Image 1 (cartoon, one colour):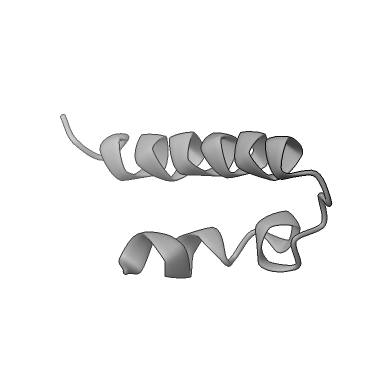
Image 2 (tube, rainbow, N blue to C red):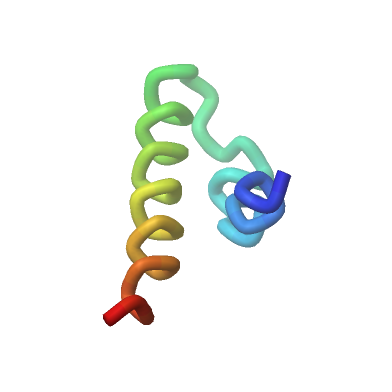
Length: 44
């Protein structure tokens, strides 16, 4: 549930800017990688 709240902070994902499912999925993958990297950057 927290992932979707974080993902909605990105306007492109929240507004479904991309009309094609393939492009939307690619953007969602990029956002998920970015969220994952942010979560792991503080770990020593």
